[in-house]
Image (cartoon, rainbow, N blue to C red; front, side):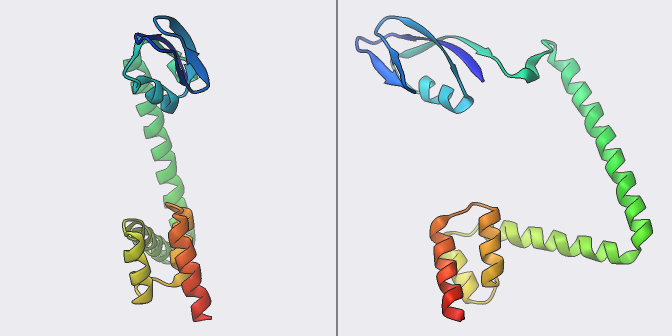
Length: 159
């Protein structure tokens, strides 16, 4: 969340984000990052002051915050490594084969997300992806309604 002071340098009042910005006057509003971009894009608006209100900015010294985050990340990584090694010792080699199949599934899902709608439909028609699998990938990924509808149509045609 940001607190922004904006001056409308134009001759006409502007309305953005449900707020009136009278000509030649300064207005202070609280906005999200996306809304800030909307306000910043207006040619007649001059950003006078921008204050970050997010709770993550408690420390003004960012170098200390970054090193603390790195320490926490390393601690979490070490804990995860210990958990993984303990699990693999308990379950044996079967666990490792499951992890490798999950990695290929993730790669297949990423590859599917890189396809256009037409390419994805052709890939399913050519048997590169199963229809149910493709629908699952799309619902977990970009959620393109056009593609989901086409895939469900293919699924109904197969049944």
